[in-house]
Length: 295
Ligand SMILES: NC(=O)c1ccc[n+]([C@@H]2O[C@H](COP(=O)([O-])OP(=O)(O)OC[C@H]3O[C@@H](n4cnc5c(N)ncnc54)[C@H](OP(=O)(O)O)[C@@H]3O)[C@@H](O)[C@H]2O)c1
Image (cartoon, rainbow, N blue to C red; front, side, top):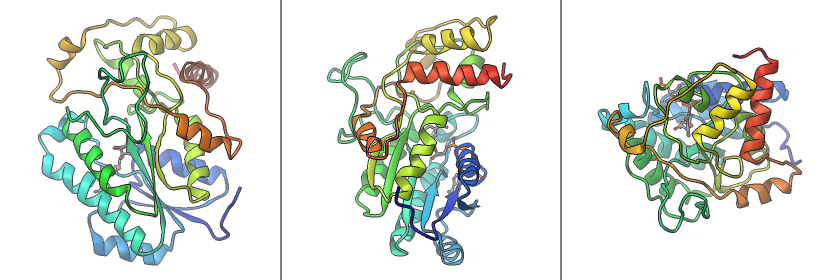
């Protein structure tokens, strides 16, 4: 592994969920890591911080994700653009001007199943244009990726429905165990335990470009919940509803799709790093949860 001497990571979005995982992971690896909550759109403050901290690598885990969920972005479009478009581009451009490698934790929620990519069919590759604009959040993310990918200092990692080994409120599993009703559609998911070490590996090795950043394969909500019941909470029960019924309780649509992970898996092979298929990854995750006493 090529580790540049004096490597220093600066994590943007320091108070966020993914950022906290990155910080813990880097610290556990004995890496030099600093976090910040400086607003990405504040060019002067961003450049000042880059000049002070002098990172070799920026990990951008900042973004407007909405609370309690992305529906918030529908009613707050200017604030969403300020962070997800102006801010993200500004930080990318500032890193470019200072010659800093920038890894962006982006989203794969920019696609939806269509005739050429039906459920069970081929997944979307990094080359496919975004085709899901049913939520303002996804629209901002798809458009900014299209611009950002032309920068020669940027690694774009498309996460989808990330899952942690605890029951953190932002984890996909926690969300679907708390909904009154859930849809049942296969999707690509990102198991943080499997993928975040890969993000560090790719960043340290100065990899560039766009990667679908999920475990291989797709898993349905019912398959996830069946495994959750088996390993973590035997008493767990849930109720399904249709996408049409779901759309009545949401302001914005939700992306459902499978991403093709061939590019990622082949790249990681160069570093002898393997990512388990999503069903296997969930088994392992829920076994870890049960061992840790998380119920
Ligand atoms: N969690 C998911 O389901 C998921 C899925 C795919 C991709 N992602 C992407 O992964 C990234 C991290 O997600 P997360 O789940 O960790 O989100 P999170 O917990 O909401 O953290 C995002 C952090 O970014 C900060 N932030 C927002 N706008 C900013 C700006 N303009 N300048 C500086 N900081 C800003 C937020 O701070 P404030 O609250 O103070 O604004 C927050 O602390 C996001 O870009 C998200 O879109 C997440």
